[in-house]
Length: 398
Image (cartoon, rainbow, N blue to C red):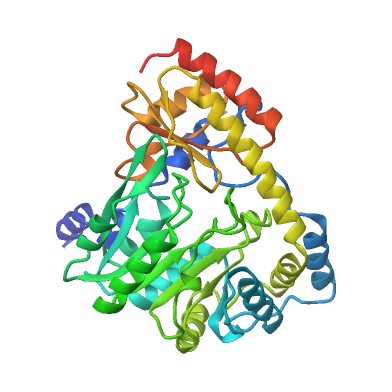
């Protein structure tokens, strides 16, 4: 019996195979290589370098001091759901109600709730690649299958072949999962493409899940095209969003789901079994962010626009660097001629030059030979990083 138990333990850890197959974060692997280097410039994670504005922090502190430390409604507090529906109606000219909104503990939590509601084992989720690694991981955790469709780089930016996306929706397809504006490429889906996808999904009975976390970080218009602008109330369209990027609240872990009102009870139930709702004082901060934070969003986007222009100019002038111009978000996803192992290259870059970038391999097919740089930083910080990066590029070998 002892030998049998030992044999079984050697063959299996007892964990689900879908979990064992998940790779560790390659981005954090590189970041860990920079621990202890005080002069490193960290541009590997996707977050603004500014702290959360004081008026948002004050709202949380006041709620906390007033004793708002108890369990909250599973769908979120009414003031925040009302504020979010009003906010989206202002942006998109829609008629959304609080019943269309569920508050979540981050957009990542929202995506997990949505996929828990939709994906059965073996269901196929069609999505674009390269992609933030957490996105395709969610269906995989639920034993779903990912059908990646590549975005292609060009001189004018990244583009999607819509026919390839729709052709990938085979018999087992259940969800079309889109992230626009896109992390890591900065690609942005057009309104015309969204309409074609929606018509196709209606015809096939598919769900559309749209991650629109970067919807406000766009440089030629106030907001990126959204499925919310074209969806009917009963369409199978779910949009996920976050407080992290717009209001510099990455550490607060607050997001929301916008969905047909008929799904409210489903998401309330799933929230109960996942987190039982975000903290009340965090949600109170969210109310103030949405209600009073528009000047901050506009200033931040203008700042990111200057950073994008600097990033494109500096990277495009470097040897061996190939950069499709990002349409939106705050990332440069650029190729380096001759680079084969992006993880090794990124580790060398942080050790030898003190610049922390994310390795392209982390973002799946299409990420090979590329690095992601988050330019949501001050211009002086970026200038120092580019000076170091240029020196490294001129002196390094693949």
